[in-house]
Each structure stands twice: as C-alpha cells, then as structure tokens.
Image (cartoon, rainbow over all chains, first blue to last red; front, top):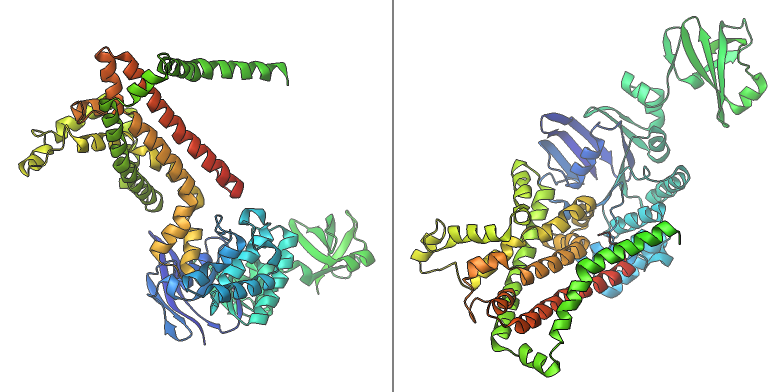
Length: 308
Length: 270
C-alpha cells in the first residue's frame, strides 16, 4: 500500500523537467520532495495529483495504476501554496465542497464538517469568508477542505512558504502531529531544507529533474550521496582544501592546531559565527552560544582551527 | 479641507455637470414642458412603442449572445494563449476603434443579398439585411469587446488554482465552471452586461445602415428619435430620448446597487 512512481518523464517544450524519476513512497509516511526552484519537485507533485499530464512513466496509488485517471477520480487531497480558497464561499462551504460533489446528505455533511473544523481549530470561523482569515487560518481551511474527501494521499505544495517564520514554525509542528494522528500518506514540496528535515520522515532530494538521494533526514544529512546534496542540505566552508560543515570545525587556543586570524564574529543569538582567515582562504566556524561564551573570540586575535 | 482640493472638487463637479448632467437635465425639461397629459399621449405613441419593443427584443438576443461569446473567448484567450488568441484579442477591439457607420456599411457590403456572404444565404431564401436579424448582428458587433474586456483581467488575476482544487475534490468540468469560475467572474460579467445593454439600446449609426430604417418594422428607439427630429415632431423625439436616458440610468443604478451589496458581502475588485 503505497505510491509508486515509475520512470516519470516530463518536458515543458524543449526543457526536460523530470528525467526518469522513480520512487516508492511508503504508506503512512511523510515525504518531502526537496530541491531548489526549477528542480521539478512541484511538477512531480502535480503529476501525482493528476493535474499535469506526463510524457512517460507510470503513477500507481495503492497498487492501482492511475496514470491516465483524471484528478477528480484520484481521491487525492491537494493544497496549493496560495491555498486557493474559494473566495466567494464561507469557510464552511469551502470545506463542504468535496462533500457536496459526492452528494453526502446535508445532516451528515454538517456533522463531518463540524468535526473537521474542530480538527483544524476553525469552529468559530465557519461563517467567515476567506479574506477575513489570516494566512495560517487559510492554510488550515485548505487542509480541512482537502481532508473532507477522506483522501488516501495528501499533497502539500510549499505549505509554509507564504507564512511568516513564527506562524510557519507553529504550523509545521501542528501539521506533523496531525499527519501522525491521521496516518495519512503525505508528500510535501519544499525548497527549505530545515523545514523538510523538521517535518518529514523521508527526504527525496531533486536536482534538475533527477532524484539525487532518498532517505531519512539524518541519513541524507550525514551521508550525502552527491556533492549537490552535500552542498544543498546545509552551509559548507573550506578548511585546508577540504569542505566541512561550519559546525564540524572548532577553534582553540593559538598553537593547538593550524593558526588563523579572526576577521569577524557574527552573533546570531543561538549560534555564533567566527570568520577566520588563513593566508588567502576565508573559513567560517560555527560555535554554540555556550562555546562562544567560554572561548570569547575577539576580532584580530589568532586562534587554532581544527575539525571536531 | 485644504483649498487646493476644494478647488479640484469644484472643477470636477463643474466639468461633469456641464458635460453630462446639465444637457441631460434640458432633455427632461423638454419632456415635461407640455404638461403631463401631452406626455402621456406621446408615451403611448404607437410608432414609438413599437420601436421601444423592437429595441428590447434586439437586446434580449444580443446581450446573451455577447455574454456567451465574451466569457468563452476570455477563457480561451487567458487559458490557452497562442499566436491565434493574440490575433483574436486584438480583433475583438476593432468595434471600439472603428466608427459605427463604417461597421454598418461593412456589414451591409458583406451580408446584403448581393454581398459576398449574403448571396449564398439569399439563395436559400434567408435575408440577413434590413430586418430584425440585421439589427441583432450590428448590435452584437458594436458591443463585441464589452464583456471580455471586463472578464479577461479578472480571469488572469484569479488564476487556475481554485479550479484545480475543485477538480481534486471530485468536481467535473461543468460543475467547476459554474461553481468556481463563473462565481469569481460574476460581477465582471454583470458589469459587461450592463455596458452591452447600454450600448445595444443606444446604438444609432450601425443600426441606421443595416436596418433600412423602416417605420414600424425595423425602426429601433434611437432611429425613432432621429426620425421624429427629421419629420419636425421634435417633442416626440425628446420623449423618446428621455425614455432612453431613463432606461440607461436605471441599468446603471441596478448594477451600482447590486455591486455595493456584493461588496458588503465579500471581496470583489472591479
């Protein structure tokens, strides 16, 4: 019981957007399609939903080949980045849309919608119009609307990109716990690596229409399969001709390693970036707040840099 | 209020008043200048009433035709852009740029019995000029862009995400069109309808040519007004003009009210 993508190929005109993409997305998992813009991740999501025709390959949902099945017969919940609220309908009618299409009797419809609005904490907003909602509320409405049809799969296109950092952060935690509670197979598209690692239990890294690596977040982070994945998942810096994550380097007293001169100290609160120069090469080292307190790096002083 | 903005207000009021309100006022002054019983007689003038009825019958067909075309062509232009739709997009504006009299003449040349287009129809016994259908044809032509010019920008702004969401929720194309697409362009369409209605009711030049201006038969209200002035019965002409003005103002008022209520209910940016 899963989503199986086999050899999916897609062109936009002469551009190859997806190049022989294959993956098996386990049932109940939360998978993030992660990649920079133009990597084909949103197109892949739209293909799974049936909103985009494909040039080659197959899509199977729970063993059923749906490659040629129209979006409306796929029973897939889809949320756009802009949430696509039906502006001319109340929150209640937005959520009711899919149930009306399915001719669910009015009494049952009301019961189910009340339950869904409770789930997304919008009970008090049933009679409002979408324009009266905040971004986060709109997103929750879009989720309730998608969940109303009891989909087997939930697809989220950049679900947190349009929200400010704090609201987005709260919603990430909430969406993740909701997904666990419902156990619904979910795929989300994002260009934000920390968001993907926070929410998903499985990453699919896409680059120029090809899958670079698939795996749990910590595995992909610790053992990047390609240079692209290595550089995309977090900042890199060079020390003595090798690339390191800045938090994998440390500074010590002069003479305890190869010496370098501190040229800048950037304090970001929870982390402190120490920028050092050795000859022509600039490197940065990431210290925790605590480490920086103990060591107290000063611009102009000489320190030793070494891998942790 | 600062002095400059007060001056601006006076200037705008004076300009609009001198241009629109005052001349209209004089028409109504003429209408009521001979007393109410004379007005009642003029209002029941058989030829004018026939003309008014013809105008309404033309509008009844021309407006729906224009809405169907306007919405359809807008969807095509916005959703499936190509070189062809680019050409269509430009062609649609021709009726606004070209003088109605030229439109009338070109229609006559094309659709009259001996015209390139009219001849085959005439062979079948179908005459396209100098009758009711000729007036409908000219009316549709002169108001061609009025619906699509309102709808196209809104369709562009609304985008396709709402429609695609409706599809994933299980809705078929027809349901998506009526429950999502049409609902987001309702007020733009209504505005286009009112513009079309005003244009169809008020068109003179093109209709004059293609109708043949036959009294009691192909004489619309605007033609009737013109004929009255030419036949030295100006009072009857003023009454017709007053009637025309009242119906146009009525259309505008109804639309304004409806739009106001709609805006109170939810979002619409015209």
